Length: 216
Image (cartoon, rainbow, N blue to C red; front, side, top):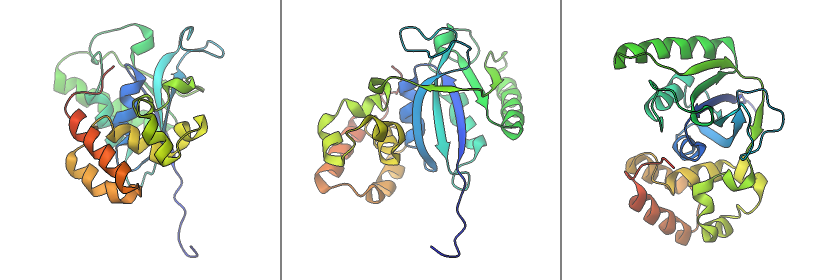
């Protein structure tokens, strides 16, 4: 529309355990545009799930900085690790932040220091500059949503590209797993423009899965 300023989206990239959980967690967050799971942080060329070399499972997030801040994303990151932030685990699942610019680097270092004071232990999260992201295989993308083939057909999310890039896929992958609050889900549901049958279906699974945890 004439006269409107176009918002430039930004990216955030986190490793926090199994990437299926992060995909659902961030997908249901207001202000997140899209999510994609994959491999990053290492030097191995063309990693795949069964041979990812020195890479880590990560969630790559596109977000609207006018609706959600990088600091808010970091808040979710610190509080939702499958294996914690104070004990080392194997590289595939380690805690990792890949910053995209100097502002992100400063914010993550400051937030790490504050979190370390809060928990009273040394945080082992690795912080590095983002270099390259390798999308994971199609069966990993929106994994929780892919367990509901009827919903994929009903919403037209039937291609690998749609699962990787669609904002609707990101939202449904979060809500179908019970991510976020009931209040937020109910507020956003009308804006998803689902059919009545699809809305009832997603609501049923949101209620069933809320509170069960997102970890693999």
